[in-house]
Image (cartoon, rainbow, N blue to C red; front, side):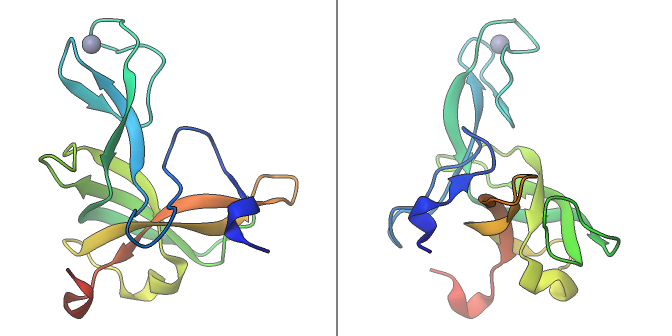
Length: 147
Ligand SMILES: [Zn+2]
């Protein structure tokens, strides 16, 4: 089955890549009034209560912390799987937010704090009723893959 037919786990969390030249991006909320980013996008800005706009907030960063979960996973996730926090890059392509996320299941035994990671989107787990869903996850960048 083509990934084009698999639905995202939730709407407005990430962009679905069209091709290699358009990598997936995390989507969050941006409040112009407060110049503040949020992930995921809240209904109202917690500072000023204006509704934030949906905005791309980044797709690369550094692992801040992580854990490996070896108990029976929810939602058809692989066993084991890893979750943690990634500090997104700042600047034009990134918000500098610290986001909670899944890591690449293939990399569970090779993840390190401080490691550079990039966002990927692919079929991972299901929706609770058995239908496969697209989920975002971060994959370590190896020096020879950068660029
Ligand atoms: Zn605000």
